[in-house]
Image (tube, rainbow, N blue to C red):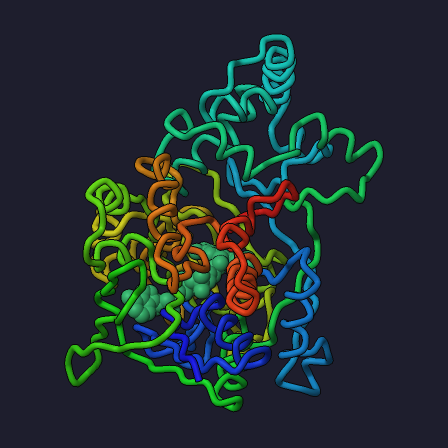
Length: 475
Ligand SMILES: Cc1cc2nc3c(=O)[nH]c(=O)nc-3n(C[C@H](O)[C@H](O)[C@H](O)COP(=O)(O)OP(=O)(O)OC[C@H]3O[C@@H](n4cnc5c(N)ncnc54)[C@H](O)[C@@H]3O)c2cc1C
């Protein structure tokens, strides 16, 4: 029997193992560096309050994926069954000028009311100018200004993009905008009011699936199925190196509690960051190594904050914070994702204060205590909470949350070409492909890989996932 060694027990790695067991006689062994499953989509249980690292909507245009989710956790009454997938309604708004705006920005009376006459006039004039004088689209700024006008761009995109990516939109290529906000523009927003359209711009998707106990519940259920079917998951085991020769991976160097050792297998599937994979591999051409070494990422921190419930609790699942006098990027209200995430949803509100950052920067280096105090002060400044209502808090850090398309990413094809040449190695998932894949796309890369191994296909089918025209909002 052939063995597949799978690196990573996130959505991609788990799906690969699950598919091997369901459809082949290949034996999967997952190697997972941490002590849990789910990767970035795990759910952290802090003293009975469950925290979703980011707020993960389950939505997909691929029926296979939705079926897999709902086979594992059927849509049913969460009051009657713990193994329940819920259908949730998206409520999310933008906080700007300490006022709430619809997300995505829409042309409603309240938008003009919140902006005031002066700003509304400026938005109108700059939008008309953007129609008359189109910019050559070199940067994300050009892309946005062409669709929304300079003033609206400055209000709602410039600062937020800088918060998320740590770069001004001037420094980001226009192709980024094509992926992220394809199809959305002020004229479309206007049309949407006149004639509400069913054409799906993903930013407008209003419902999504969500496991009763958070995304981690889905991955824990899948992991239990994998074990039941005879697969293996080795926790707290990290892949430190990859040995390859004659276009084949021959072994992995793994680090476990007892020390380092070699692990052999027939097929190797990697969802670990490409940068780490390449830097741990022998005989990599220098150019490829240099490109991989400089691949950029954006990291992420979140503060879980338990506060007393007040009558004015907000209805949103999450809020985009656009004001530039605070560093917080998004606020999650976990009660509104699923009240079952919260130990006492009647009396408490469980919040997630999200910060986009870079490993080692000033925010990242702050101690937990200092950072939590800073985050609480920001929410007070935004008039969202009162200090005396804070009951408990925790800070979590997520490295490499966002693979970024800057720097050496432009030369990424050389890395891909080199990796594709290693016959028994397959790269899947988000960081495993250095692509901005959501859970469904990460899973699809795994499904395509198993199909390809069964049918001896071409590796390009794995890399083609999430390059199609149909737009998905990225998280
Ligand atoms: C803030 C935020 C919000 C998001 N919201 C959504 C959303 O609403 N909807 C959605 O569909 N997607 C969302 N995503 C994306 C989603 O989290 C990812 O698509 C998904 O988790 C990727 O799965 P993966 O298995 O490829 O990678 P990961 O989840 O990163 O899992 C990789 C696993 O590999 C392990 N690993 C890494 N290196 C090694 C090594 N050397 N040895 C052994 N193990 C290793 C890691 O510990 C991890 O468990 C969001 C992401 C972020 C950051």
